[in-house]
Each structure stands twice: as C-alpha cells, then as structure tokens.
Length: 131
Image 1 (cartoon, helix red, strand yellow):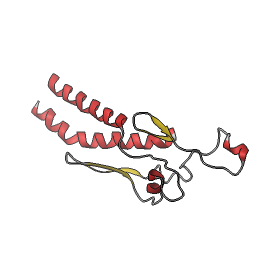
Image 2 (tube, rainbow, N blue to C red):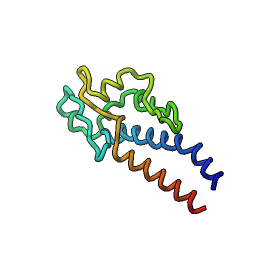
Image 3 (tube, rainbow, N blue to C red):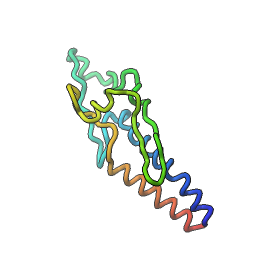
Image 4 (cartoon, rainbow, N blue to C red):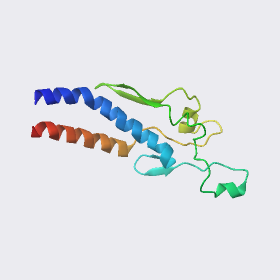
C-alpha cells in the first residue's frame, strides 16, 4: 500500500492538470464554457446576413487555431497545478470580455471540472484501499 500511495502521489497532480487542460480545450469544440452547464459563446457578427445562419461557418475563436492549440499544463505538484493558454496575447481579452470583444470564456473555475477531479481522487483512493 505504501508503494501504491507513493506512486499515486507522484502522478495525481499531472493527471489533474491533464484533466483540466482537456476540459478547457473542450470549450473550443463546444463553442462555450462549461461551469455547471454549457454557457455558449455569443455568435460572431457577420456583415453577410446569409452567413449568420450558415451551419458550416467557421467556429468562433478558431481562425488559425493558435489559441486553442496553445494550452498546456505549466506545472503540476501538490501545492498547485497551473494550466493555461500561453503565447497568444488576445486570448485573455476574449476570456474576460475586454476591449471590443464579447466575453467568450474558455478557461476558469468550473463545477464540472471540480467534480471530475474529485471523482479521480476518490477512484485513486479506492484503488489503494482495495489493494
């Protein structure tokens, strides 16, 4: 049990970081942020009215894909886990809704994410106890 506990202590922070990163990256596929439920992003304004209702139009916040691909687990240990989107300056303005940008949050506190992390920890503890 001690060996299993030690192994869990080493890998859990990285697992939590990965779960968080995948949750935040899902915002781009969902076209909205999930806290308790999905909060869809405000649609992009188009000068062409026929384009506004086109289901095949380009996804919001995805042009080059630079922002959605810039996410990473910066650090993960038992003191803190840092996940973010790096190197794309405009991301924070969209996430917060600053300047002329409507708020299109893709990262932040999430009840769904907290539940996933809690479930992971409970499952890992059960594995150790059952050994």
